[in-house]
Length: 186
Image (tube, rainbow, N blue to C red; front, side, top):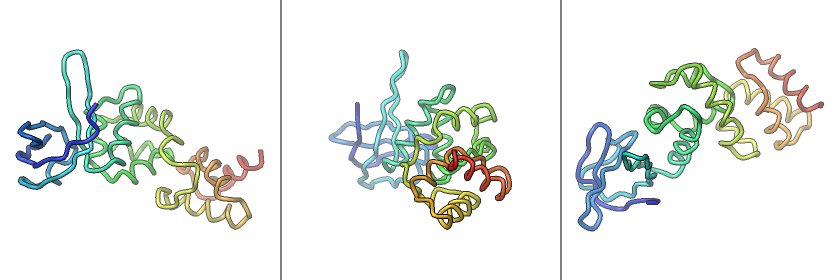
């Protein structure tokens, strides 16, 4: 409903900020409210969460964080509170990389996310957070090495990206490379 609010930050609290726009103060729940400064004009990218008993406005510094938040709340068992704790805790690229490389252990470090929730996040979001193009910045060291090896063997980036989506990088590098090759040779 509200895509963004542009205004002056008038209050900062541990879980929210207040952004004044045309005489109206909007209470905006923020993953990292202290990134804003009182008196500063800012644009907050927002999401209005509506339940039968409450309307909550969530705000983010950029579209990328908002998009990750929206994807996370689409996962069964992950609500706005859990999604906020995830996006507040770490860089969005690291979170996306953990999901794309099936790193459930990494995801369990976030408050309120156990192994079952982490696996559900991976199951629901793996392959949906990045384009089919190979984005080397999002990949872990093991997946970068596997991607480089596959590229040296003559595979194009699109083929590599598709195969890496299905490889488990928790295993050692040789096994991961064999798994990627098996996928490509099917």
